[in-house]
Length: 115
Image (tube, rainbow, N blue to C red; front, side, top):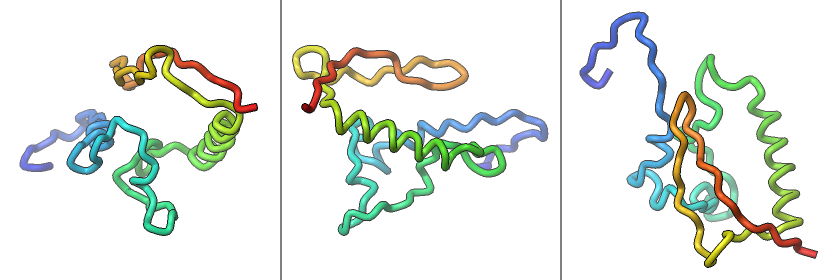
């Protein structure tokens, strides 16, 4: 692979975030920009480099259910609330907890009702 020999039986752990955070592929990758995944007509563009549920035979069996549930949950929250940074209208920096999985560190925000 890429000029390296990987011995049989070697455990390989893919680092998907290295692709997801690649500035050459995605300008400002740490900023939420759904338009980078839409065409000129507003239709979704599938990008095989985005792999939140892994790939191949080890891919998540519940991917379709998870996507539906995430959509329902997130759309309901965004309809009912406006989310803002806790202080100074400044979004906190993205920091991660490292371990077996890379996960974002907790941060505080304020949720304002959209009544």
